[in-house]
Length: 428
Image 1: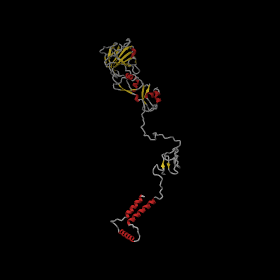
Image 2: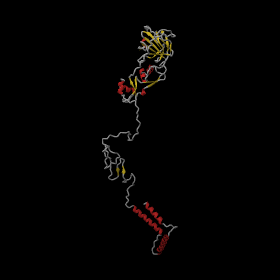
Image 3: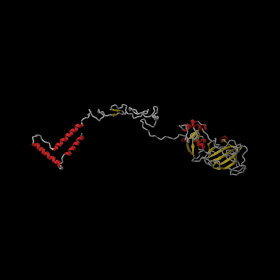
Image 4: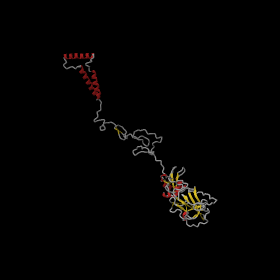
């Protein structure tokens, strides 16, 4: 209706004559109107006449009234407010679950936005059933598992921990210090000397060097690396160990082994320390003079000296006689005198490249021999006869030694030539 009023106003504006720009027709129309007015006023009609401008205005008003009447014919006026959710209007509304209300014959079940397990769309009358020929959405289909939250949110994938538990973190390291021996280091960590020997692939017990790093297993046994064909059962059978003990010692969470794992096999054993090859005894015996006197290398026929004298006064045992270490190590300060344990004849005095450094060998008769190793100096010569308690040298750490001590051996039978080493403590 507002548009109709605006149109009428524009029509009136166009029809209204412009006083400054009147056309000839307008002038003529005006003159005729004046003449007609005069005639009417001169006649018998007694009502006022309308001018041309007023007549146009009246006509426009009449047209507007007619337009208003025509625009309201057939309008359906509601009894209340419309276009509001609180009004009694008949506008259709969509329910929360998807149901359509307010429409005749509308499906009351609502339009479900989910697909049923049978593959059909539910909530719509006459909905087309989904083709299930591909086996999708079967009734017995298991629910899809995934990284979803409780509200159905897809969780962001996280990185997977691929580390494998093994015994590498249980291995300890020790830096060799002055005065350390293999047995002493093993005692500090409550394991056997051979356990340290095997873990570090040592070839000589006297090859320790100051500053050297040693690997110390957590228990007695072997440290191995899992190979391509190794299993927990095969390793346990090979090293005569219990699979449960292997799992427990190494803190394993999975009995399935992985190539490259480091494991400690408790109670396992490997090759023993190889016995040194005996050096050939010179066939020719010569007389060697030294500051302590002279003589021949012919040993006494019988040993009659009784119990041995302690060869290092004030010294203490830093490593005992055991398998792989067939001697006792007597630690003492550098330069401490080394004495002959019993009277006898010097059959060797000097340096040997066998790890013992400067050393002296004595023959006591009855096939009994003693050796004194790692000395810093020698006081006797080959072929010399010495008395029980006579000085033969001084404590040192020559050869393969980690600290000042005397490596003292007792042999039954020729040294390095068919003889065997026995526990020296049996003779004190």
